[in-house]
Structures are given as structure tokens and as C-alpha cells.
Length: 308
Image (tube, rainbow, N blue to C red; front, side, top):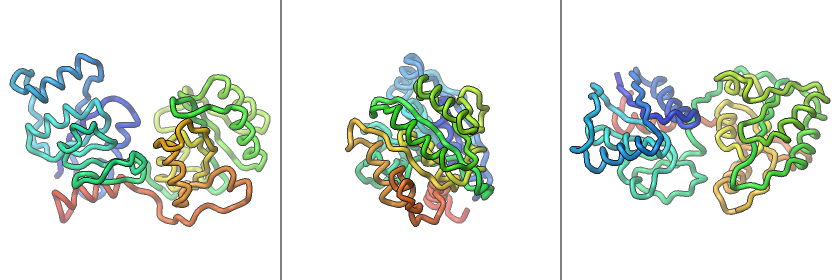
């Protein structure tokens, strides 16, 4: 029995990465999971800072018996995870990129390739973040999913271009389900919903979907279209075994991680850009379904608990 302590911050995207590795560990051995949620407010983070640097001055946490491994994702979880790792003398593993000053303190860091972090003994490069999505082999060939992202500081949102490209895809027919995201501008969401109505396609506003809805759509869809700003959704769709196409984004910094990630996935054949779809070019030659969560779990077990 492996007792895993997951230090979480309440952000769904972060928790999916941690729980994806936990689920992968469970496919190899028995796992007992305990979750500890940390506060993300300034006061909570100051307390975590004191506990890390001045442990004698901090209030003692109630001991958690039998911890073997600590997992965490997100900067707000790092200090607490490292403090508990030192207290219990157990490995501490994190997803995403820790601050440079703390990076060497983690037993293992699972860091996406698009972050381009220099190699080190405790750094494992992953193709995107570990995901809780897996290929359940239930895809229906006539079903497709279209996910529209939205604003962030790294891009110039071009609503007219997106709508034009989306209409070209809808004109091609098929049974599509379309959704937006919290970052989608209101005008874009309204225009997309209107366009879906014209083509008899179902549009689901993200506010009206239940937890787990998007994962269910990945399980059903054979083909997925995404705006390339949605990095987490790109890797969720790939991990679910979908064929992934991308609507291009105008990046402000062509050397930034988002633009780099888009080029990397195209060059490796994991995604098909809109321009290639227009030419009728097939998807790339990638045949293996992405499963970085399982690879991370297997690395953990091989390092500390070989034989599981």
C-alpha cells in the first residue's frame, strides 16, 4: 500500500495533473490518497513561508500517519509540500515548473517541454502536463468536439478569422458539439452560438456544463478542433485518444512557450493545423496515444518502489 499525500490549491487544472498521476499509480499498485488543501491568499502563503524557513515558529500541523510520497501542482502548493517532505523524510514530486530557487529541493519535477527548462537530475521533461484523461476506446467516428478558447496576455484575439475558419469546418458536415471557455469574449461566444444555430450544431456554454462534461466529450469524439491557446485542453484531447486539429492564433511573441508548443506539436505530427486541413492533408503519423501521467507514475515507482 502506497500512501500518497496530494497537496492541492483548489484549481481544477492543477488538481487534474496531480490526480492523473495518482490514478496512474493506482493502475500499478494499491494507493491510499490523502488530500491537503492550502490557502492561496497572502496570509496563508506567509504562514507557509514561515513554516518552511522557520519551522520552530510555525504552528505544528496535525501529523498525517504513514505518508510515503507527496505530490503537488502549482506554485502555491510548493512551500507546504516541501515543508512536509522534509518533516516526513519522503519524496516530493511536482508538476509544472517550480521557481528557480526551489527547483533543486524537489525529488522530481515533471516539467512540460514547452517550458524549455535546462536539464537536471531531478527534472523529467513531459510532452505537456500529465493528464487525468485516458483513452477509453469509446470514440464514435461520426462525433466531433470543437472547443473555443479566448483572451490571454500572449495573443491577439482575431474573432473574424476564427468565425470564418469555424464556418468552414461546420460546412463540411458532421455531428459536432461546440463549447467555449471562461476566457472566450462575450461577442465571440454569441457569434459562435449564432453560427451553430445556422448549421444545426449543438452549442454548450461552459457555464451550463457539469463537472466531467468535457472529459465525457473527449471520450465520445473521434475528431477535436481547438484554438491553440488552450494548452491544457490540447493535451487532454491527445491523452484521450482524439485526432486533434487546431485553429491558429496570432501570438505576440513567436518565441514564447505557447507559440513554441504549437510548432512542436505540429512538427511532431500530434496535431493538424487548419491550413493542412484545408489542403486535405491527413493527420500526422503519431500512432501511440499520449499518456504522460502513466509515464510519470512509472518513473516514480521505478525510482523508489521498483517491482510494483
